[in-house]
Image (cartoon, rainbow, N blue to C red; front, side):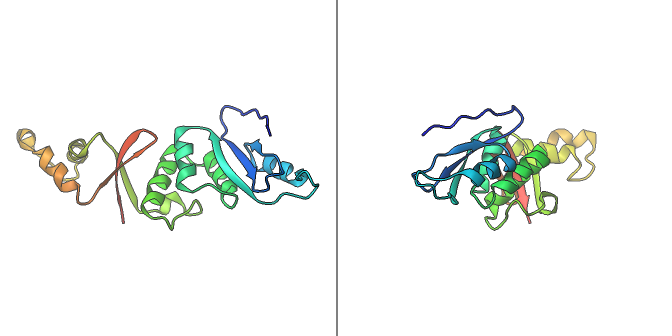
Length: 176
């Protein structure tokens, strides 16, 4: 069976595939599109179709990883579509990292209330340099700055910060 869909460039595209093999799948980008299709969808015997597998088809890499993190399904796709429109990339990144670290979290949890610190860096040495530059270790006199062992600080940071990749970018995070 085939389905046609057009997708505005700023929206994700999802696919609803019925578990009933005698009913067609369809693409959608909004909850309204989904509800209007489901309201009239029947299998080849004229019976209504109620259960669907929901798949992420198109969107940004970050949105794709968010769909994977939430294990996109019929129960949470509406919230997913809402989040994709409402949240900034930083909030989506926090949600992906937090849900990867703690599987009990969901999209209903406010990303601003999650105890997650994230830093974008290439490696632990780069993270150590960021912390020194931001004053994490206090004020360091100029004449001592060249004696700092960023490699050693980076090794110590491995105890508190985890490394992950989200949408091709490397992040270091700590979650309380």
